[in-house]
Length: 354
Image (cartoon, rainbow, N blue to C red; front, side, top):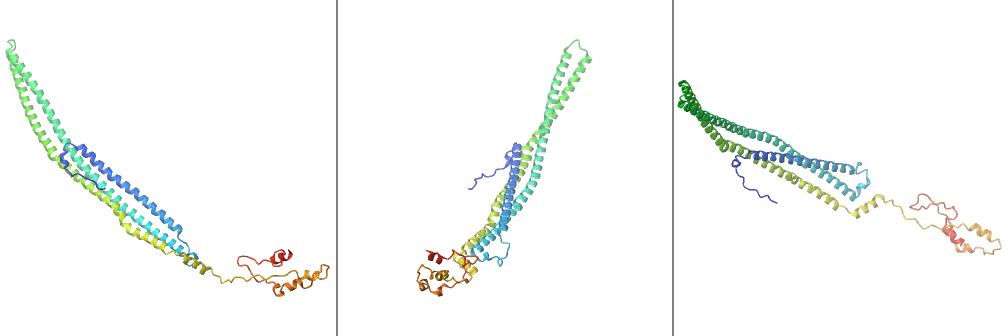
């Protein structure tokens, strides 16, 4: 949103608003210092953010080489590493932002603020000297005015006294002459005081005219020029704040594009085939287990007993070639061969017992 600013007027029109100008220029300096502090805190945040990102990247980057790590052959893991590397570049750009903000705003504006304070101090001292000179001229005028007033009263009193003695028949001639001399002296002093008062008045009016129409307007113009330059520098500082971020946007965009490209390279079928290629052993599926007959000794014993079991009944049902023992087969998921001589472990024997 834009800011609607009024057309700047000449501060010389203030004339008697010295205190107002002093307060405003001080406020302007405080605003510069406040903005410098704001940017410095933003810089510290950027530095801390970049440092945390760097630590995160360091934590997740593999310490082994890709040749030593079989997991690196999977595209999903390669994409993860690429995302981490792009994040490392992203952290670098945050460091660039922090550095540019620090050098282009904090350092430069802080230095400019110190120079501005000295310039402002010089202009204000010049204004105070002009004020002091005008005040001194006014005090001199007041003193001459009071002296003229006092001398006029004394002269009038002396004249009245001389006239009174001149009309007094009891007054001596010497007293009358003395009173007349005193009246003349007082009148002369009053006339000198009058001239002095007129001179001081003329001087004060000149000084006052110089103060309000020449000296203070010049000082206010200097302060206005100084303050407007301050505003311009502050404006540039505001622009740098955004420009610094905009300068890294293309590189940050490339980092994000790199992350997206890494994600697009992930192929679940490729990783499935890679698992097969890495762990394929060439092991063939085992053949069916053969029946192991443990009842042959029992059949020979029972043929001589009273059970009357026909000889060869079981032998006629089982092929002797299937009764061989196979001790070389191994289950693919078992750690040890099962003991074929262990009783109660043969499913075929359990069936026969029933």
